[in-house]
Amino acid sequence: MSWQVVEQREEGQVDTQIGIDDSTRPVRVGVVGLRHGMRHVAGFHAVARTEVAAVCDLDPERTRAALRTASPGCRAVSWAEMLEDDVVDAVVVSLPNDMHAAYAREALQAGLHVAVEKPLCVTGAEARELVELAESNELVVAALHDFRVDRAHWAARELVRTGALGHVYAARTRWLRRDNAPGSWYRDRARAGGGVLLDLGTHRLDLALWMLDFPQVLDVRAVTSRALLRRCEDDGDVEDSVAAWLELDGGATVHAEMSFLGHLPRAEDVLLELRGTEASLRVSNVGDSYRDYDLTVFRGRPGAHEQVSYPVLPDPPSLYADFVAAVATGTAALCPGDQAAAVAELIDRLYTAAGR
Image (cartoon, rainbow, N blue to C red):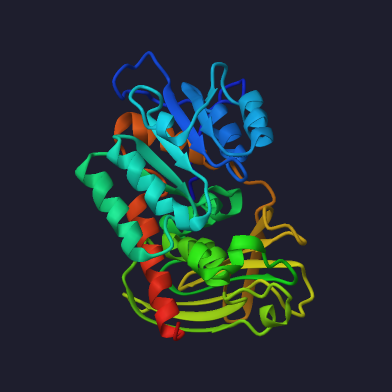
């Protein structure tokens, strides 16, 4: 099989082709929301011919930290100032879920390209509206689904893409947490949009569908529970666990399970399993980390089976360099808005199937 590798510059920056208006100047990025957005400041700062030109946050400590990390000349600005002409070329929205749609819409209306922290929006209708607005204005809207560029997941996608598994007829994915239910607005359905299905399910369902080239989802079933969150003092009104089943065009099925809480043997249990006619693969987390993964491939015939592990995997593309390249050249982003909208619409269907 072949691996796709992004060449890294010696200083650790990822080289990209720039061609928006002036090939001699960098793509200027602004980040709004720095609680989770700090890693995006660092990520874009590491991309060649890219400048983190502005940041926006209400917390002065986070703002000062971002200015120390960002490109020289980066300014702390208000949201209104970030939208002004000739400040930035693109905006990263890293705010609470219920704010994604409004901020992304305003940025697109101001003529700016947009990358949004997952989920793209809290409803499929809002997400689809952003995609249509971006298309009508010839702008890029993308979601920062960072698990796509994890080494093991990227390698798994390459195995599927090159036909090493044959026809994939079944997928199974899960993210089970023993005791990690986020608090504050995450437990408020009006602000978060949902519980574990939306929070962890966005990642897992996106990965499963991306592996299979986003086939049409013909039918869905889902069951949710908040049995354990009900026992918490700040129980909120979102679910803490979900089990879901998808039927895909072409006959494949996807089984998915996510939880925030449970009497489980591991703090974090994350899995993606794909079963094909020629081979199967498993991407599973290492220990209790949800950032480190192993890839294993299983092949065989009756009486003869083999298991192949990949202890060393090539580097995947940079999610940040990919977005900059999409902005600069007009090519599709690695996590395009239409796929993120499809995931949001699927989650709506699953909530409906669960009776929400």
